[in-house]
Image (cartoon, rainbow, N blue to C red; front, top):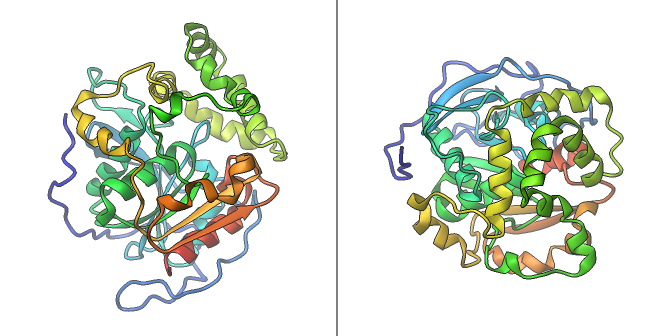
Length: 344
């Protein structure tokens, strides 16, 4: 099934939505804009569950997602990365819901209850696929425009939506900065210390790596949590909540294909060649944006290397003492970034 980004979109109207918090909602103006405010403080690990997961058919997928906040609130879509899932936002979502936002947190393709509708569909893990899924989800839920926030796979998807369909992206919060991969530039070698940090990506390029990931999913991804966030002292229960999402029949195929396409070792879906070509020019993001860096970003933490790629209202923030899984490690500051970018 091909994706039509210009298909008819209806104005959204939901009869109800499950909120994490029934009180402490911000006042909404008649135009459904959130009154500027500081996020309600939240500590990591305050929450441990979402409301019951919903499912919706969107293009080639049946997408599982959590929802919170008032049905008529401004929409925020929170997109997780790898090897994580919607629990990266388990503390962020309640804060935004309490501030009056309608919060949507989907499982990406290959994660949790999100499933392909057809066994014949190409299990495409290229960066563009996750952006197309995001717009398809918005169409399925009758959402015309949303604040997009994410990191890793999810942040890259949000970046791409902001470039290709800016009319659908009200504002952007991007963990790890500018994330759109230029495939040609990505084949150029980096200094040895930076290459060492990519060991798992080289592993996935091999048949041994594909088999190893498939046979050791649980332990491999737990190792990655420690590797990517060395200062995060998460407990077993926190990891196990997310580990369940790897039990998806397409998880390994999507992850392996994603990393291989980054280095020209696998081809994407040819029906998206024209869209992909636009992503290979270092396209500038014009929507209001807050980029976030952490200790994980090393020398790139100051954001200078990608500042020129944002042309709209812009702010860069550094969260010191945190790793790759920024919203789960520092939910308070991440939630505040979402509220702040809404008022830029």
